[in-house]
Image 1: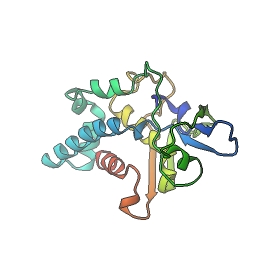
Image 2: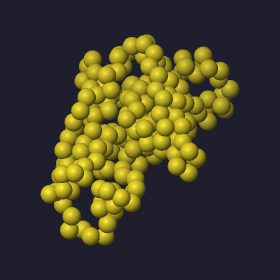
Image 3: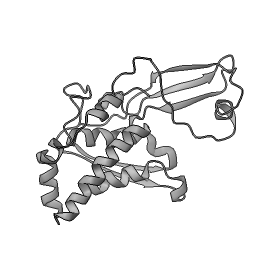
Image 4: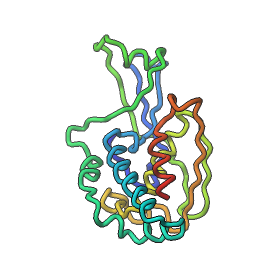
Length: 204
């Protein structure tokens, strides 16, 4: 999907339906972090930084002071990441869709390319996140998706990227914002973006 910056967009969604078949409609959450190339760029940075922390034997307080100082970010080139998250001039949209082999997803994964679909959005309310204070999320399976961009938003703020990504002043979390996320998956084979979440956990 195109990048939607800021707290006001977190948790909103698009609807996709097959034309002339109103009863088959699915909702898809806006989720910038599920862009594979974006995730790869962030993982490359996060993994490098975590290795640096381990090599320098920094404790938690030393590491927090280091990352908040932004010194570690100045030497990293985020140009490719910024480019990936710019508005798409071709007006293309990317969807990450799990094939459940029934309903709309069965049509989407069908070899019959004659189907036509209507896409609407962004729709709905946002997550209603406050700018300060402790927030806690409990999710299972794909239920983590509406919260993925909140994790990304917090990371971008720590890296000093929100302004470059088009986040408007006042539409980001504050300095005293904290977020604890608990995720559950049936097994690692069915996980969703767990590598990225674990990398963020180690970084923060």
